[in-house]
Amino acid sequence: MRAVRFHAWGDAPVLDEVPEPVRAPGEVLVQVTAGGVSHLDATVATGGFELKPVLPYVGGVEGAGTVLEADADSGLTPGTQVVLRGGGLGLLRDGTWAERVSVKRKAVTPLAAPLAPAVAASFFVPATTAYVALHDVARLGHDEDVVVVGAAGAVGAMVAQQALAAGARVTGVVGRGDQLADVPKGAEAVTLDDAEGLARDRPASLLVDTLGGDGLPGRSRWVRQGGRAVVIGYVAGPRVELDLPSWLLDEVALLPVNMIRQERRAREVSDELVRRLSAGELTLAVERFGLSEAAAALDALRAGRVRGRAVLLPG
Image (tube, rainbow, N blue to C red; front, side, top):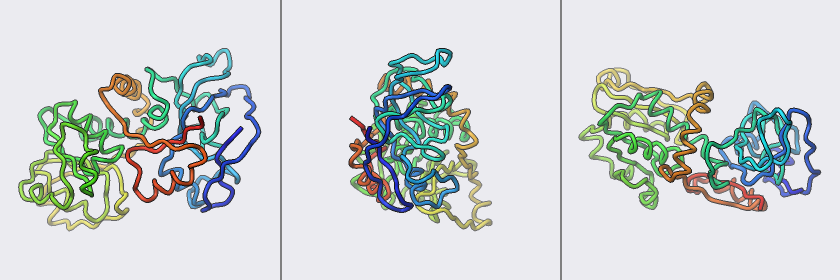
């Protein structure tokens, strides 16, 4: 069986021949159809993350596949399409970058509706993060003006789509001109360099920011007084400095999205999001790589060159 393994911290992954997994009681044997490639995978591979698998290890903290074998009382039958997530995958044990895996039952979730394997392997984080950010943290109301920063990325594009579906007027802000076409249809698309009007007019009642970094306070001033700025990510930098007098005068609430604490809520809403993805009401851009291209997929992810999400396809 083929699997993509890391043999040393910081090194590129290697496609290896490894023994077939043997299913233990309480586990599910799954034919992997797609393995997600995420920033968490890249972080774990450095060796600097708190959780470290034993080297060499198979990467992949999430994925999708079909059930081959399961216990009779598991509620799973052969052929069931499932999402693989949790249970220490890619963190404490071998992950999803393999042709087959045997995983704990709690790491296997049947899909509520059929999805393409690449989407099934990668939808969970962007789709549920967007839902929680808009509806649970920001408490999106009717007839709102929403600005989404990073609207060409997987999470940002999902935020924009779900806000539009809820009746909001959406402006999607991207970093480069070549990303304008990736902003979901129905949203006004602008680049950061062309966002002077947002700073001048302060049109938004809600900002959803996936970038973070030292530009966050300035972008929060795109929101009118009494509004909210929801912070999802920090790809532009982990630190920010606030001038408290200006912040108090602006009167814009900064609200964090902590998806670790929201994991249960994410699982609660995921079935409905799967149905909407299956019906085509929501879409997710995915770039596909073969198992032999795992190193290239990671390089593209780290360089910010992936459109949407990246996945490895064993087939």
